[in-house]
Amino acid sequence: MELVVLSLIVALFWAINPIITKYILTHVSYPFVLVLTNIIFFICIIIFGYFHLETIKSDWDKISNKQVGLILVNTILFGFVAGILYMYLLKHYEANIVIGLTYMSPIFIIFLSQYFLHEKISNISKLGILFIVVGGFLISQNVK
Image 1 (tube, rainbow, N blue to C red):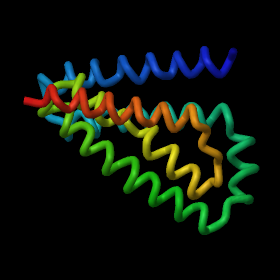
Image 2: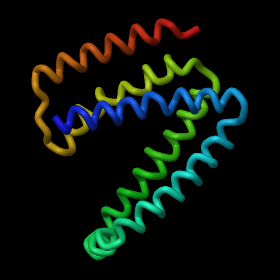
Image 3: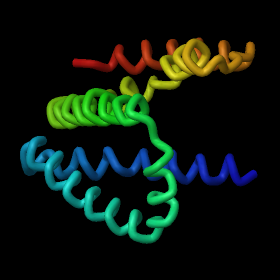
């Protein structure tokens, strides 16, 4: 039950976030919003880190150079670059279309997790992928 409730709360927060961001982007540039939101995010991370300092210190000695490299690539390429593209799309296109298309990530997650993490894909998951693809196609038909 905890999985479902917390996941739905995250989904709600991730649904509210782009609406607020899109509203702000109607008034200011996406580079400004990206920088300001990440400064605020950085401050929140510092505060969070303070409360979890012992865990962070413990893990600092455990992390390998390969893992640090993966974190760098993940953060810079898949986080930062994706963030720039996301802000650009939200600034120039309708939020419901941008979010509908960019939140099709489960399609990629299912296949990437199977390949890299050796997770199993159930038939229900495959059916879900089909629905996501159909939904993405239908959403993209609304593009002007």
